[in-house]
Length: 282
Image (cartoon, rainbow, N blue to C red):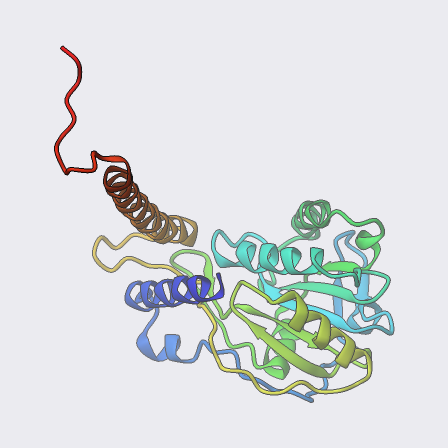
């Protein structure tokens, strides 16, 4: 299962590399997730919560470890997969949002509204499905200066494409200590529940995790052949469809071969002793 997910991830990365050419090559090269383990995030920065109230980042930490997700709420592409993957991993944990750790989704788009943040919050909290998560899962919007500062401190490098009103950015999740220092990074869209649990517990003890291999998808999609932009959702569906079709074809071939072998064995075991062919009564 893990190997198939890794192959799918590589396929998606190659697809994005070949199709993400609207921004300049230099701009795309700058879109990385730089690991700054031990870096203190400025917790005095002000943002707006999903209710439109001014709030400092430190107010979202709650003296507990915090999972920090940077993206944007109207994103039609990878951001949804990041949060869905995170929710799937969190649902496997005995640790719970609110009781053991907090979650902060911070929009990198300064134009996004608190109303949109509230919509996303309701969607993800419902999907998570555990009581009390709404009080400790924060969806924040803010001005460009505050956003850029958090992005620099966390090594989250992104770019805006005005032609499509979309952001090209890396994917992943950061684990912060209760004081707001970066303890661990998780890249991609699938997260190991056991590793996530270990990272949360370590962050709660103000311990830093180790550097991990840089394997982060870019949330951006452009088709240079027809000059049109498309959702990454369709790309994932296509790649997943091909992988599923190949798996089904292999399964059918395997079962057909096994059925032929079984029939041959039955014919050998139950045929006439003299080797003659039995004929039906006429």
